[in-house]
Image (cartoon, rainbow, N blue to C red; front, side, top):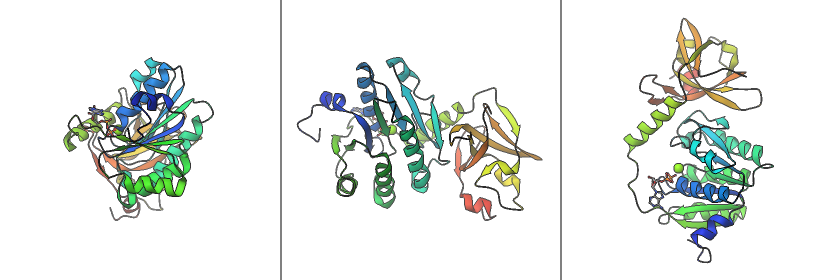
Length: 293
Ligand SMILES: Nc1ncnc2c1ncn2[C@@H]1O[C@H](COP(=O)(O)OP(=O)(O)O)[C@@H](O)[C@H]1O
Ligand SMILES: [Mg+2]
């Protein structure tokens, strides 16, 4: 442990309030988050687990920030099934800082009063301008009681320094996982494809949609065929994402989803999905909207 006064067991059982876990890809953030969740559940606490990793996702489908309520150890068996979602619309954390930060902050706010412990698991984007801004603004709004920095070498030092200097964040460093092989890009892609497939379980439904239901709204004269195969967030009227949808244009525009209960509008993402392989292609939304893509 970075803090020699705390053993591993003490660290896990001392956690309270909001714990945000940061670290490079494959450093062991999610494993640590699971251990923390298990410890808290064994202690009879109610835990809200918020997963803000968009690509290698634990709770909910890729492209979303997910929340899972855990009230008993059995709830941890079904982490993938989210209780609430915020749609970001991309699997690339570097491009969508605003949506990620807003999504995480909004989920944390929604559980603050009821949860005994809130665990915020994050993506591996921790370095450079983007990584520092993303984590800094997340911490600024989430106001974690503790940040656990899962550290290999010196890769987290700039970010940790920044959190301490500007936000007086209490950061505890934890040594990174040194066992196990990191996932290859192909393994990550396959895992993501499986998670996208799970977001579209049979029987799927196809609903005709009007061009007026989108956010951002479509420009005048927009050719709807450009939305073919685009991922959307199916939204209610309370800012919640109910599930993912995929648009289909064949003479008319339809959304393919596993349900439409409470559907009020569709947030357009920045990903096109192949319905057979569930592989993705990134799309720049302003190029798509204004005819350059
Ligand atoms: N302490 C550890 N010892 C050995 N292997 C570990 C440990 N922590 C994590 N792993 C393995 O490392 C890989 C990445 O762990 P994960 O927790 O998913 O990382 P992250 O969430 O930071 O990307 C997984 O295969 C996991 O089983
Ligand atoms: Mg993880």
